[in-house]
Length: 197
Image (cartoon, rainbow, N blue to C red; front, side):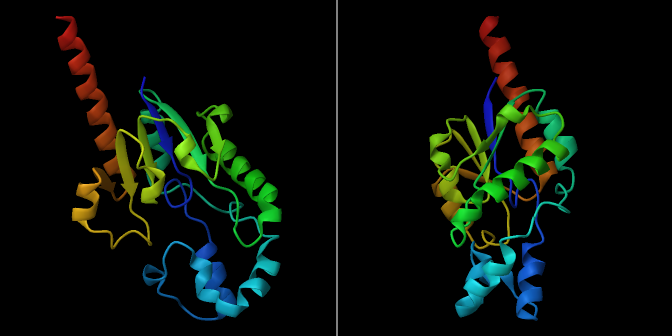
């Protein structure tokens, strides 16, 4: 059975972080032009923001992305699924334990069919050895045999050429991801059966 590593933030779920930052600055922000770290828009207000933010649970009201639960449940029948997520905020490292707890409780609540032993909390995802890696950051999937980039606000401008050069497949939603991996599973089963004939 092939091992699959799936990221959490911007892949399984979106949080209210966009809205929290906009509420703090009091205006709408074009996050497509910000980059991965949304908090970089705060400038010299970053320390004040994180003094308030560090007590918030981003996952208390979060939900899974559309079709995630159903597709992931199907994939779990054919693949060994691991959820791997970073939990350390670079600005408030001392509160990483709270964020880990919040993430764990969300995964345990929302993904009742996945063994909690398959939840991995790691900042360096290159340590995780899986056949297939799915993430919204390219650097987290480069060492996998099958590399899948899940479209998120900060990676939309990565060109098709760059992805092709790095042998990365882009998916835009959970239905696309499900179709891709279920097709791969069927094709692999056919190859195994043909070898036996």
